Every structure is written in C-alpha cells, then in structure tokens.
Length: 324
Image 1 (cartoon, rainbow, N blue to C red):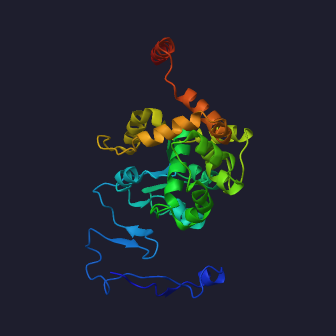
Image 2: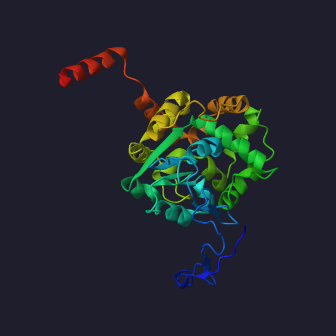
Image 3: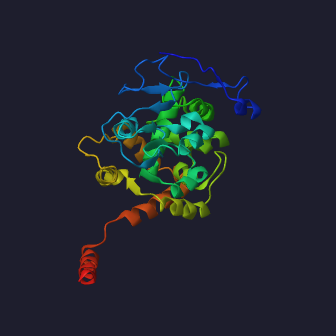
C-alpha cells in the first residue's frame, strides 16, 4: 500500500529542510490489523525507493555493521543483494541518496545488523570505523576501471543508465558528452579524447580510488602525497581484496559474515573492456591521469602478496616455538 506522510516534524521546518514538516508517519493496527504477527514488513520511501524499515528476511540476521566501499562506476548489484539480505537493514549504492542520507544510515544506532555499500568519499565517514563498522573493499586494476568509466560514459550519452543517481548524472554529463563520439577501438581517438578533456571531464577520470580515500569533496584534486593517506585509511579495513585474486576476497567475506561462498556473485572481466584497458596502457596521457592510483595499486598488491616459501616456513617455525 502507498500511504502519505501525515505526522508533523517541527524540527525539520526549523532547520529549513522541508516546507511543511509533514515527513513523519505512524503505522498501527488500524492501518495493518495483523501488524504484530506479520513475518514480512518493509517500508520504503515511495519516490526514492530508500529502505526505511524491514523485518528480517532470514531466520538469523548477521550481527555486524558492514560498509562495502564501492570503487567502480559499475556497482556490484548482485553481490550486494546476496550479502545484504542477511542483514536487518541494507542500503546499497548509498551515494545515490546524498551525504546527509548516508550519515543518517550510519547513525542507525538502534540497529546492530546493517549492510551499506557505495561510492563514498570515505574521509567523511571515517569516524564510523571507530563506532562498530567494518569496512571491506574489492579493488580493481586502474586501467580496467578507466576503460569501464569511458565505456559507460560513452553509453550514457545515448541511453539512460538506471544505477546512476541524480547527482551522478549531473557530474558525469559533461564527460558523457565528451566521449559520445570517441572510437573506443582507435588508439588515436582515445588519446585525443583524453588529451583534450577539460577539467570537469578529467575530474571524473583522474585517480578515482585515491580520491575516494584521501579527499572530502568531489572537486578536490589529489597529488602523490595523498597516496600515503589513502593507504593509511585502507589499512583500517577488515578486508581488502583485489580483482586479480577475487577468490581470496570471496573466502574472506564468507568467513567474516559466516555465509557460504559457493554462489557469491562477483563481476567478471569483459573482453571489450580488457581490450580498451590494453590500449590505455600504451598511452602516456592515461598513465598521467592514473598516476596516483597506479602507485596506490602497486603498494597494495605488494602488501597482499603471500610470503615467499622460505619466509612462510620461518614464520610457522617461530609460531610453533612460541606456542610451546
């Protein structure tokens, strides 16, 4: 059923956030007679689809607060659904709703089972890593992500993309127009498009992961010095995966959440995007645009490498001696 908000909230009027303050609602047995007995109950905002409340969809919800930082322009929708349904509250692609709504989701202190995912500037939410949230992330090869962004921007110029929110559409519109007629199979066409990209287009492409971890506003530029800050914030994550070894990420998430990994849906690599990424690797302008992310990616991969066999044996031996 669709019901109007009929409860007046004076504080909303006083803060200038709503013209008449009728943003509250009340559900009771006069509206839903079997309210207490219902095993299924979900309340969404009719306009945005934002989940306001739901009763658990599984017998036992996961008693954790999880933030999955999205670093790709293409969200991992199936993965979020697979994980999110095990929590009492979930909010995938939270960036669609804006900063204030995201903050409200993080402040749901009465709920201990929360799954949030999104392409956030994490410095704005870092405090919540000290308030019970565990962060996880699956990183992507920088050239592949750049290829994906250019591909989606070109497509956006000709069709509506459902997973982009209103803010994304405004920010990405100039870049979509810029890449509308670019031949993605031509090195020369790609090179020219990147070289001639104005600042509002470059801001969509330049080292996006470093920017997510080191900046607080979308317009803020990054430099090499921000790579260290980005790595420092990443070190606070419970799980850091890389698409070069997605199996590790699957196992780590499954262990953290206590759910089987057999049907974990992770995005697969597409040959078209692999080909574009290969072209971009040969372009110096692409390397310059991804400079901070390439440095960041190098250090993260080095840190994630398993120890050499000799070192592993030494560690195991020392652990055995310590145990005795």
